[in-house]
Length: 125
Image (cartoon, rainbow, N blue to C red):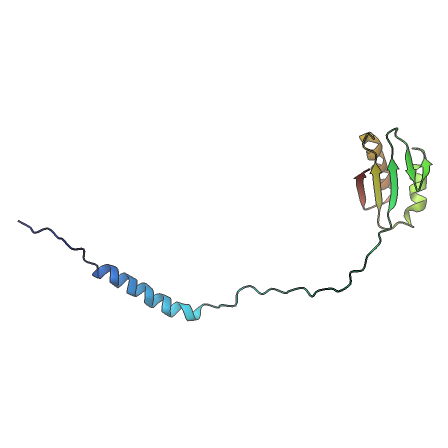
């Protein structure tokens, strides 16, 4: 009869670990340890505040439009906006009252796009 083994032979396991250790010792010096090349921004002592020149239209709850406190009718929107466009190169800011109808805001955006305004922002009041 065969004798049973009471001990585990660890020689093959040791051989595998030694081979892995040799591989790591050979590969480790070849690995480049540069990491990420980051460019850290320089601290700016003074931030210049840039003021934007935007046309500020107000859309009220009753559907009326105003710019600079002056009421503008729906028929006059295009002509008023066209005349003021060259003075406001940064676009159009629409400030809508909370209960203003969506169609009035969309009408103002459509008119602005038709005359060549490239930047339109909408803000609630």
